[in-house]
Amino acid sequence: MTSDRESPLVEKILNLKNERNAIILSHNYQLGEVQDIADFVGDSLDLSQKAAQTDADVIVFCGVHFMAETASILCPDKTILLPDKHAGCPMADMATAEELRKKKLALADATVVCYVNSTAEVKAESDFCCTSANAVKVIESLDHTGLILFVPDQYLGHYVESKTGKEMTLWPGYCPTHTRILPEHIVRLKQEYPEAKVTVHPKCHPEVIALADEVLSTSGICRYAKETEAEDIIVGTEIGIIHRLRKENPGKRFIPVSEQAICPRMKLINLEKILWSLEDMAPVVKVPEEIQIKAKRAVDRMLEIGR
Image (cartoon, rainbow, N blue to C red; front, side):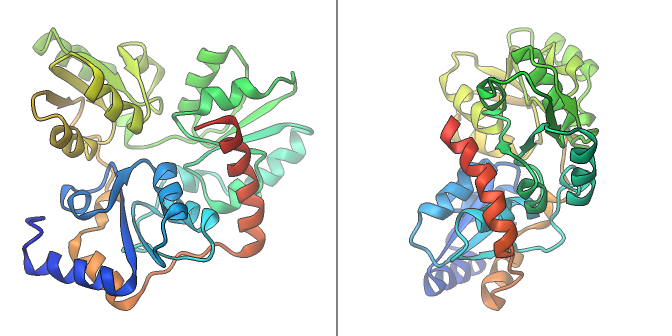
């Protein structure tokens, strides 16, 4: 399907977007057609902050459910639409608030740091939130010697441990998409593209991270792609980001580590669903006030430390 802004479908979306005083936000992993129609493309927290800063009444969040929840946490007075209600995150589902409460009882006085890829209820049970971009900074800011419980991504947690030297109790969650990226994929591509730089997401296996030139969040990968002099870049994260990288850096070649590194939930949203969502003003994602207040505390503490 074309994302040509002169197509009838796109014209309908843009007209309705104006009528609703809406903006469209797209995560880096979304389909190319969705990224092309969006007002902003970025990582989940950056998009939620864009939502909070805009004068728009309606936020069409093209991502997965926890991302729309984060937007609701940061801007509770806006209407947050998630064009497909089935667009969830398997890793976020690996940690529930009830399970976390039980773990906190077992680990008395532990400081809970949750990755932003978690539900609003889990954020509400946490002391700090973090992103893949600032997880190291958040953990380094904890100057006490007490126990740290890191939820829910064990591989991001392992990477943070290796960078900070701080031992943490790691929740046994993981991203199914990033665990499909294997060391042998990188070894093979390095043989094929010997001059290429390798950049991977910190949600990958430690063995994959060990082979990378750069370990970066999605926003970091996009920034690195612009700044590096390398012409060939091997990219170890969800393949949706390749669209943005090629679009922003036409003179460089981007090679996905694995064509299997695809998140099917991220690919549920398309142009038709964006149009239907704006027509019906549904599905709406709204975090209850009690949870929103507690979850925002964890997010605000992170933002005080730095993006």
